[in-house]
Length: 198
Image (cartoon, helix red, strand yellow):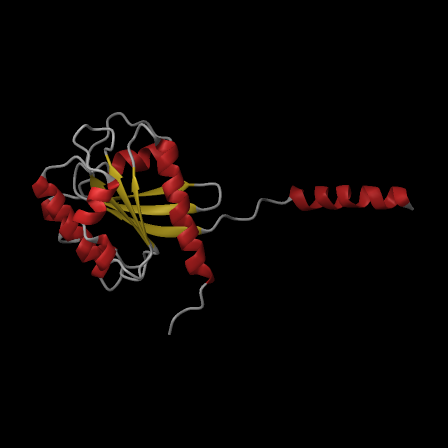
């Protein structure tokens, strides 16, 4: 009888594992940031696409970014002046927000980015969602530190009580970028398990 017992788990395992793997949860995210902040390059690298011949997104594009424990359907919105005013038309249905900023940009662009981030954090369709804020281009000599950006963007008072992650990033350290996205996926999963607020 001990023989039967010892083969049982193996048979059971074989039967179980033959089926398709459980589907990974999918989350719909919106990715915003000024032109030149590096949104397209980061997303292309995460999808293992070639970083060559990348052009700025003029309208919007959608990428399915695969991770081990989730698939992120990222709607990337172009960051040019004439497109930003239409961003909010694309917010509906989003479950999280990725905001990419160029930490080595001019003061003017940084101020514009701050205003856009503030608008997004306070937008009725986004204000309850988790935010991943990526301070990109950390490999450039003029890059500001995460501490400087946190202070300049006034994130502590503005985003108090919200779920947000601010991380440094650059294209030459994609592992760190993936880690930042894993933290965002954790926030999205936590949100899934919360009782819905009335």
